[in-house]
Amino acid sequence: MSAVISTECLTKYFGAHRGVDGLDFEVTRGETFGFLGPNGSGKSTTIRLLLGLYHPTAGHAKVFGQDPNRHAVAILGKIGYLPGELVLYPRLTGREHIDFVAHSRGMSDRTERDQLVERFGVIVDRPAHTLSKGNRQKIGIVLAFMHRPELLILDEPTSGLDPLMKDEFHRLVRETVSEGRTVFLSSHELDDVQRVVDRVAIIKEGELIVTGTVDDLRKAAPRTIEFRFPVNVDPEVFAAIEGVRVLDTDGRHIRLSLQGPVASVLQAASELDPIDVVARPADLDEVFLAYYRDTSADESLPEKTREH
Amino acid sequence: MNTDISLLDLRLRRRLLIGYTLGMALYTLVIVFLYPEFKNTTSLNQLTKHGSTAAALFGIAGSLTSPSGWLGANLYDNFLPLVMLLITVGYGASCLAGQDEDGTLCIVATLPIARRGILFEKVATLTVQAVVLAFVIMACTIVGRGFDLALPISHLAGISLGIALLGIDFGLLAILVGSRTGSRGVALGVTSAIAAASYLFSSLAPVVAWIRPARYASLFYWSVGNSQLTAGLTLGSAGVLALVGTALIGASIWAFNRLDLH
Image 1: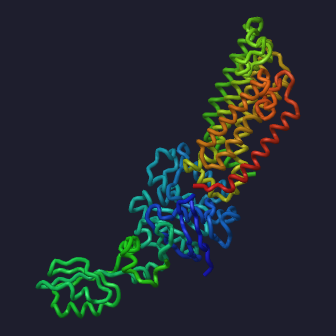
Image 2: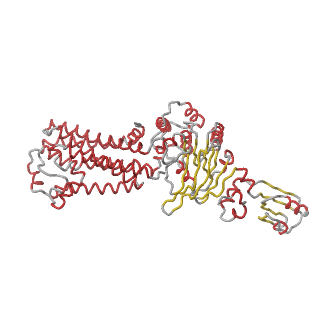
Image 3: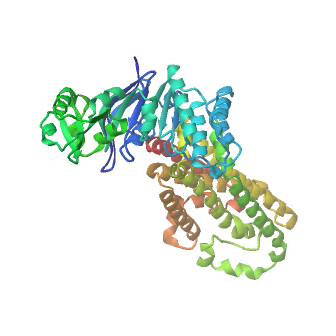
């Protein structure tokens, strides 16, 4: 699989302030790549570097094998971009925005754009300043997708959309990828990631802390097991087992975080005659939060998924 | 050449441009219509008779009651350049740095158009605004031929071109400062300060000896400060203004290519 995006030690500083530092990752053709991180972690900075809007302080990015700063025209012709904070011209209508971008891109076929307008119920006849955040975002989706780009770079794409529109957007992303096109999706909305993303990278304070498939991250994350016993039990029985942390207990009820095989925990519990057990795999938000906690991530997550 | 960005910016500024142009046209017509009332009021000439510094500060020199003196004192030497700079410096500061600050430049900057191409379209928009204002006002002053303001059309055309080039040059300076700093405020402030100094150098040069050599550094001197209304715009003056504009475009391309856009 060829890399649509690749970065090598990509670094951007704004004076003394670190934007991103030493990013290394690849996005291959035909995948949906999730780029996760909280506000201010460097997601938008990375995107602007990929689009050639920013100039790297060190390292480099390649999009379609080319430098975004040197070959912006060739690269931007194949990209659809939805910014995290889409700003439209306040007095122009949605149609005027769409017409302007379509004409600037040399588009003559209106089929795709008309379909997108209808599909998302885009309000095209009112000035942008009179539209809600969600309705402006729908215009942004049309602007990003209407020229059927080979690469979609979407920064917080579902921000402001209602649940129905989010569903529709996720369907659109899946259709796009099924056609062999590539989606780079930056978000702190884990729902977006869980539903459409193949691989994910998590960025924290400008540094990439992990990349992998969503399944890999889930497997690597600690699971939670809860036991209920007929009598009080000593939590040390479980705490002594390797890979187990006692999250909380009130004597008869105990909640454990487990990293590794479950057999030893079940064996220890069975000797105490439990009356109930609940075990569940880690949700992606737990994985995400675990990586973001200052110290717990380092304690609970395995080395094989950690890059730094 | 793609003109979408130029047309978009003109559309976004059409109300402002129409407002300024109509207002200035109306003002110019009033000046023209009033001339017959003042052309024999020789007491007005006392103001400039002995090389008054106060008159020089307003860009006024020579007879106020002559056709060229009347139009110069009331329009071409001060008010029209000021309004021209309001339009062009305002646009120069906002068209890249300002639009980047308010976020709308993102739509344009992520189109498959080279930054140089974006800049050229902005320069085209700047030029259209300057030329429209200058030559609408020229058309109004030509009306003055029916009101005893009989100046050669070639001189009116020359000074109109000079003022248009003056506006374009300062607009380009604002584009350059905006492209270098990414700040509309800095672009407005720096360019306005330089324009004010340039105006003072040109207008005070006739009455302050030590300033006189510095007038060559003033774009106002090459545009309106060297008797262009009576002698016309020389090829040399137009060349200086065009040369400065070309240099500013080159520097702006260099700066805009290096600017981090949001």
